[in-house]
Length: 298
Image (cartoon, rainbow, N blue to C red):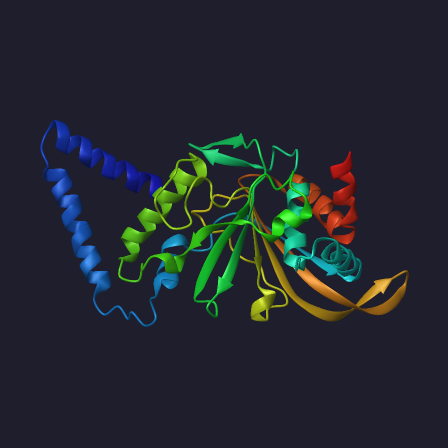
């Protein structure tokens, strides 16, 4: 549908250039009427920048996504983190570890790590992992990115480069219909065509190959995060809160500290068989993070 709307606008512009501006004037007039109509009665209190971006980003739930969840026994991961904290002096967390393992899981897998441009899939030449962190009690998001995450050592994930946040610019006054167009165009230019775009958090490919976010900080134990359409990433990983759960280990029930790690995968990029392969590799690294270090030595 967005393609047909875009073609209609381009047709109006071409018609205006070579014939006259009647078609374009009608288009802009209808757009103005729609904008005024939708802005009447808008409650700014409930329609802040992030709320407007949410509305402008997603349509109805009809996009293909694969959902997976891993109940992560974090006992070995905590031991690994403790040793790396003592070694580096950095306050490394489980979220950093999830991103580290994700970068290694996507390494050398061009069938998953890529972009869809003009209806075709193209593999990327590197794996970048971004963090999307909630702040200000969930009213805002901050974006950070680790470039070449498949090559970086674990401590590098502690200090990623900041991309931007919704609070860097006030979008609450922008009509949703216009904001949707701006986000889609800016996202396509920066994430698909890899062009620099002057919007907060949207430089060259700001989201990379995968987004990692922590919902546990907001109290969620188990949640699937939707992939923002303007991000154009194949994978979204969400880290839940730590909980005590009964697990069956060697035919015995034991109470363990567990973190639910969920994956949302864009079905356009990969089928369920390849997604399962990446998932198994990813969870293998989570269960034994030192395996990532051993691969780095090879």
